[in-house]
Image 1 (cartoon, rainbow, N blue to C red):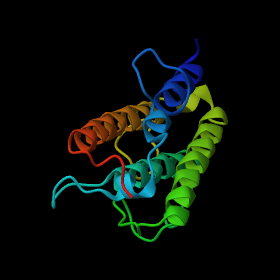
Image 2: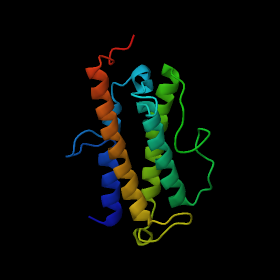
Image 3: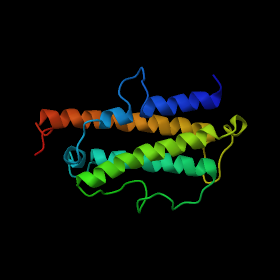
Image 4: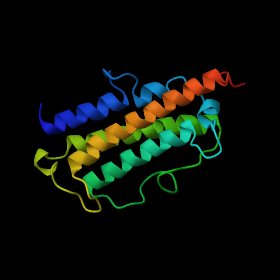
Length: 162
């Protein structure tokens, strides 16, 4: 398997394709409603929703580096962490944002020349290949956090929000 194909496989199995390791990021978000997504397990902890949008932001960031786009094109104001309003329409819109951002990242990786994978893009200290593998690992890291948060919410009987 060529390097780019392997990186695309990593992106896909971390996000939404069948994987040997367990749930994907999109998989752990299935069935989560806006109320559970907004639940904060402690004052200084992020919500599922914030983690999800954070993942979308870093997909955007890696895509931006691949295509050489300037900063500022992410649809939400700010960077890295975003407070989100607790309502169903925004939750659904942000789920679409995550999927759309993943699709755009995947398209950028598909268009990347294999010879460029070992080069370091402007504004980074890591190669294109490291950034792509890293964003896949980032999805799985936060998918694990979200899975734990869902279990914690279930133990506290918080999964059936009114």
